[in-house]
Image (tube, rainbow, N blue to C red; front, side, top):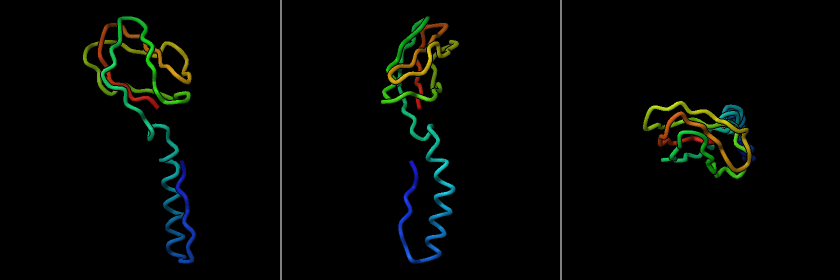
Length: 98
């Protein structure tokens, strides 16, 4: 997503818009700015398939909250509908997907 420039005859405003766009477009292009949070996901001891609800192939994930000791890793390639996580123990987590 990029910032649109508004047409204006005021040179200072035009220059400001160009500077803001140059600074904000890279931030807005970062996939983490559109992160979706999946709360209270129950992982089993083993592989759990989770619908990530992004509507497209995800680019990454992070654990935001973990309610117990467990080692967790992604065990299948990213795809358009699911995230497969394998856990060393049954645990409840909140996950940020992007």
